[in-house]
Image (cartoon, rainbow, N blue to C red; front, side, top):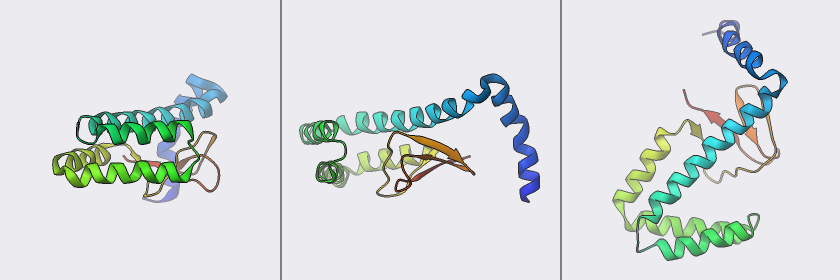
Length: 138
């Protein structure tokens, strides 16, 4: 499909959103992307917390990241605990993979979601220029 056709096809949806929200459409779009990302993160943590053997270590690592969200060492430690839990439980790994595959949000490895957003092109970028682009799956 060519670009002009795509642009024409999106217009009814975009103008409807603008009609409903006015210029606040930008804020609403950012809020929706953030809500979907945070919701997926919450569901992933809930599923991982169901594995009693790794829950204490995950809880401690989550608390460290919550207290110092910019600390790369704490983030790496949390990733390590998640990795250990996934390696130890094939069902958990399968469930998490399925949750990620079913998500409308696509984020690559090492992605970071940080507050402060803007929208442009076909992606919603959350965070500063050094952060990732979050793309919706259709």
